[in-house]
Length: 335
Image (cartoon, rainbow, N blue to C red; front, top):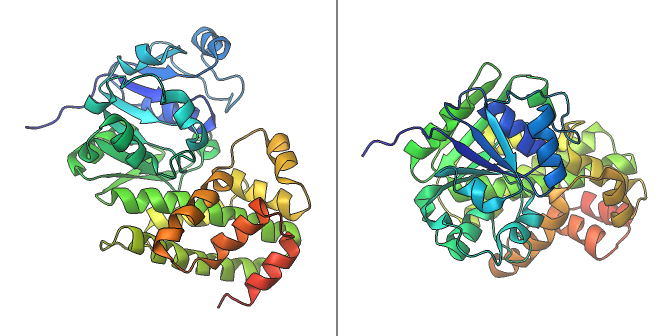
């Protein structure tokens, strides 16, 4: 049976990436984007003034196209298709203890680049295991694509991965516009795990930058990082994939090098001597790589993949090993 484009779509999350997602969807959605965020005052503000006062405030929304609410059940009931844009670290806070919410019958696309820390699971597995959503109804949206560049309408690329590629194509068509190019993939687990890992390696790149390492070493670091991603993803989900494509290598490069990368910024602050807590406080944004690396190390206890860069980041962030010492040791392990 041929699927139809959804008339309405629900978006979960109130940060910069969710704000950028709503902007993109407003270009093509026939009905409305129903947008959930935790803060009722902020939801009311956006409904009244049509822009997010805290994130990407330059984006002006069409009041006919959006409806913002802090009522989760109401927003989820508005559409059969949902885009998740809340940080992975807070995903279980949003959904746990609230019943099924009908998620077993929804089509869910995750734009989350992290692991749900309480479960050490990528969002696709979290929704499947906790709510019974079939894998063929779960997809992922990955870059290279920074929210800040979407706000500026700079050309960006998105890959939509789903085991049911027809659903991926439908979701892609809702995002495609003058400044967004799209492609589809069936590699749900590979693209999602790669999207998690690239944040860890962006933190590593930031730490090296903060310590004063130059472009030459950064290039070696990222060349080794894509090899780590390939080894890990192939071990966890062994199917044929090309990690040189934009969904893998492209997403890694933009996250590791861009001035807009919060993971690189976080790592750079740690490299310059900030404590983890002070860096998080000063940024006032979620660096997914901090939470992701702990789960990656936990998952890797089962698979035993050689991931020295990720292990170095873990020791710096969680075992409080000196960044200078840990990175000096790492330089001898890279080729």
